[in-house]
Image 1 (cartoon, helix red, strand yellow):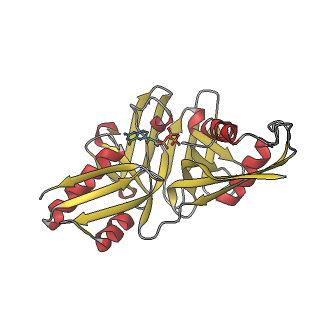
Image 2: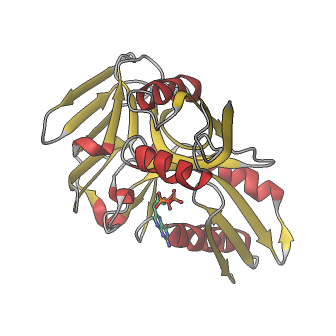
Image 3: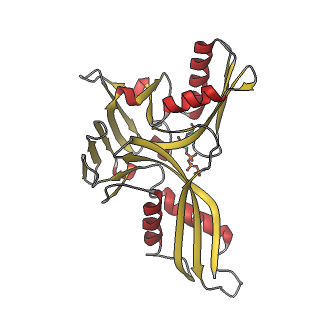
Length: 278
Ligand SMILES: Nc1nc2c(c(=O)[nH]1)N=C([C@H](O)[C@H](O)COP(=O)(O)OP(=O)(O)OP(=O)(O)O)CN2
């Protein structure tokens, strides 16, 4: 017997991509379980499937930076105290963080399919009662229209969003004077794609003006990141989705002189709306 639950939860993370660099991802998670029925006629109570899988993902890959340690140009060092990542392609990148902020794989590239197979195997090391096979599938949300992936960290967040490089793949909706503005949506989504969004308060001095470095202390420990300034976007506030929506609405209203409303998503199905008069 096979039990399935589609879109059971989602993973929000960042990925070190040898072609694109730091990339924000959001993957919907589907699961199939093979096994035998119990006396209650169930393979595994649906009410328990979600907490079981979410607990595992939240304690693992979710809200981490996924690193393919065999990718060309990648140096990865880990100790009990912290992990250090240096990459040289497609651009110079450095990150230091507590170990739980990173998930490293001895691979040259990370794809949703390969990651799903790996997670399925790992879950099978300690399967739920009566389950004899686990198959996860990870896929991007189907988005008609513009979408962009970004990475960030929220140092004041009490949970895993404090991690300096986790990300999301998000829709972007823009209205001007009450009318959807698809051209602006495409332009701004393209500009935002694969950027690192940073609070100006967390930026530290860099000898090289082309580089941007950010350092902060949060509940989980010390975080540091450095990347080219042109791969970043600087906000004068923490990079919550509320502040991202307000920042974008203000920028677009100023540049176009029109009443602008922005619905910014943080990953799948949630976000914030801000409206700014020029
Ligand atoms: N009001 C806000 N709350 C939170 C924000 C925010 O911008 N505004 N941001 C975050 C984090 O950035 C985080 O990445 C959001 O992740 P989320 O998917 O909400 O995390 P959870 O695992 O807690 O949520 P699930 O729906 O359970 O996956 C947090 N809060």
